[in-house]
Image (tube, rainbow, N blue to C red; front, side):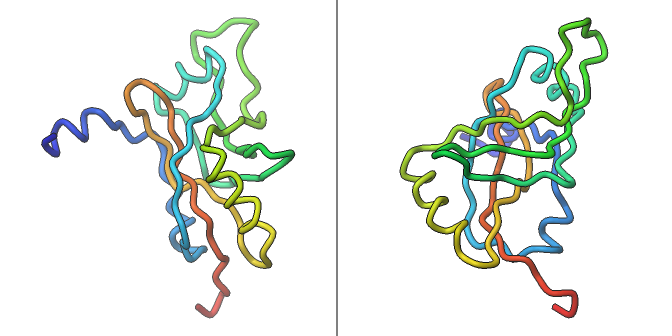
Length: 135
């Protein structure tokens, strides 16, 4: 596959630029995101903000919190809530690894970028350690 075909198959929607500045990236994961109909339409328009978003492992599932997906402009009464918690789809082995690693002191789960891959919204998550101000 050429680089042109790869870039056509992967359309970047949002990038969390502050994450690379504020955190030391330890490990990266690719996760699918469970969305409603108006959320994916709004995401395809590029209306996703990852600035204050973070991930959390709760009851054996991984959730994306504080990710703002703006309401769809042509939506109706059935439009989605912009800041709702969204479930992330990972392999069981990756979830088990995250359960162990996120309990360590100072490690957190943050989204680095959101992109469309073959029509589906994916989120690149990172296991990261916060940097000090003087770093």
